[in-house]
Length: 459
Image (cartoon, rainbow, N blue to C red; front, side):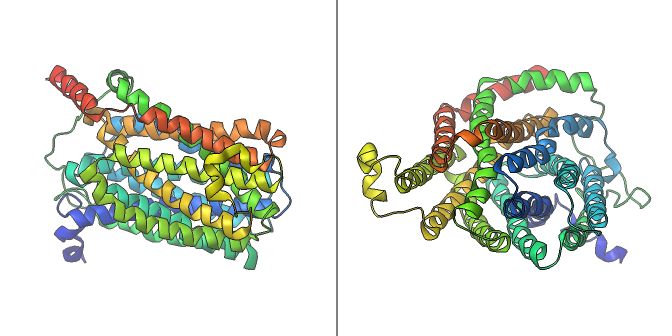
């Protein structure tokens, strides 16, 4: 067994496809609680007579751990056990917490259908460990991946997360209807447990310990061995407030606020307007997500070749168009506007109605667009990180992005009762439009020059 576990192909730094495959697997694990709590559960709540405001509060609350990943980042930069790798001990720890929390959710749900408060509590707890695992995985990816493979690797990592929440979203939709919440959580626990074994048997670099009590030693690699919280904070101030960094933060603010609105609007629309059941919705979202994930992987190599900025602008613009079409045909169906009001869209929407086929088609396009945005934004944020504080810096970006989604959902809950379906779609189009305008000002070369100056100042 030791002979097998010490094979070079189990070392992340040794083989490109080993590290890409392992990172993809870790992202798949993150997708499992997303599939349960963010894909299947909102439509489950919508079909059990919960209001759009309740679903908005649910979505905003369980998403909070993803918004506060920045709290975890400094601890991962400050406290390490280098004989087992720079980030891997944290991956194992957070993955263990995710397995345990999902197992507890299954146990608590055994007596019967859990209350909304219970769903919120365990959704929050599972996301604490899932989000923390994400920080550790991202830090490891920034540290291990080569510059010329980040676009491809991020495409596969996004593919892994999307496959995770798409497949388990579909599975959860079936299990919730055919069995119960406890069975659904038990299945999630088993799958996450298998992925936990991947973190155990792989190592970052040759010669490192597999577990604290096994043979091995610290690999010879240039890492900061003794950072303090103060030094981490000082370095973050130097890099996070650079102009290009702020541009990306504000772009992500408006894009993710749209996600917060969509988390409540889309499942409630599917339930109330299109009369789609929990299992039908989850299955459809799952299949579409898988297709989108495959397309995202195909796009990955082109991101490295042509640049992430071009792709994110095109994808955001396409998202604006899709939402405007949805707004137009829904408004026309409600007879609140006439075709003459929006001549630019009349040719595209003349014969379209807010039917199941039409809205499902728009959702498919939007899902593909969203996957491209997901892949490209991760790649962009990784490229602007400073290696001195990469885990914390990247965690801050992702935390602010997820906080924006929570803010969007919370603000929408306040005004949801005053908006009809067409205005909901228009609101999301406006948010994406603002994000598109902001990111057009991003200049990666300028940021690279700023990072070079910081490196020179450190030497």
